[in-house]
Length: 119
Image (cartoon, rainbow, N blue to C red; front, side, top):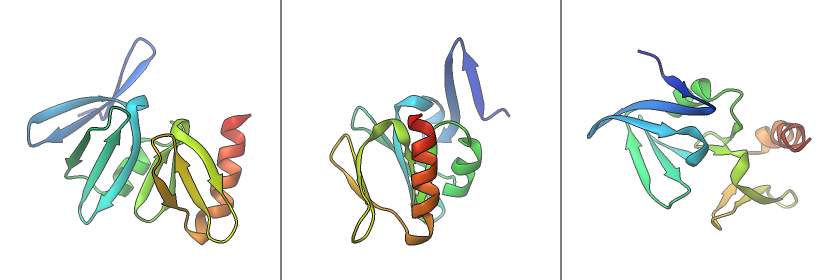
């Protein structure tokens, strides 16, 4: 089964959930958090969804789609970053007010990726 489908200019992620097969517009995902062998997706409308997929699966599926892994437990959508605090423990502040730590080993990759996305 295909993971990502495109209708017009909009890309959707197909995910199995307890409700059946969910069709999720990729640009509405703010961040994805690892929860053991599950992942919790957070959306711009404030809702969330838990699915039986590991974060590594999402990282591979969303490569090149404005997502970056900033921590072993978080994958974020660059569109929803408000600003970053890069001193004394790097953090990303999202538009919804959430504050997420950037792992020390991921900091340089994040800065490079974010600058390229802004250009």
